[in-house]
Amino acid sequence: MTTLARPHRQVQRVIHSYTTRDLRWYRREVEAALGYGGGIYTFDDLCRGVASGAMQMWAGPRSVFLTEIIAFPSRKLFHIFLAGGKLVELSAMAPDVVAFARQQGCSEMQFAGRPGWARTFMRDYGFVAVPTIIMRAML
Image 1 (cartoon, rainbow, N blue to C red):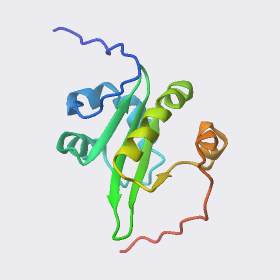
Image 2 (cartoon, rainbow, N blue to C red):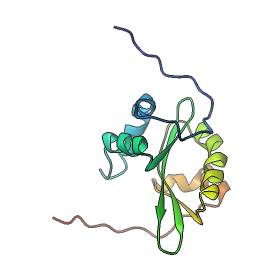
Image 3 (tube, one colour):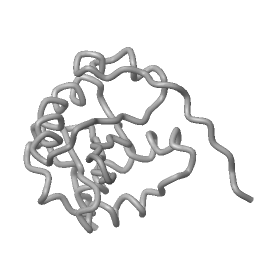
């Protein structure tokens, strides 16, 4: 049996060509980040989202962002809902992510993550912490 090696790549600027197989290379990073997400998505959900084009994948050698565009009646929101891997790589990808959001006509960006993200490179891109979201399970 042949073991596949993890691809060595520079930060990717083209996102539309990613496949489910590409996302599987980053399974460790993705599942670590999913652990903080409250079970909203499974890894298979993300594979389907990337494969269908509903979600975008941004990959570095050892890091990944997953994003989606949410259209509201009055505006488009660019939602970064998963980040995993090395902070320095994620920071290097941020300019391309921001530029893509602008190209898509998004008027706002949102990053969902743990409170510590507010003290990272996200500040350099104008992200600010907003009030807490309060949730309730519907049993």
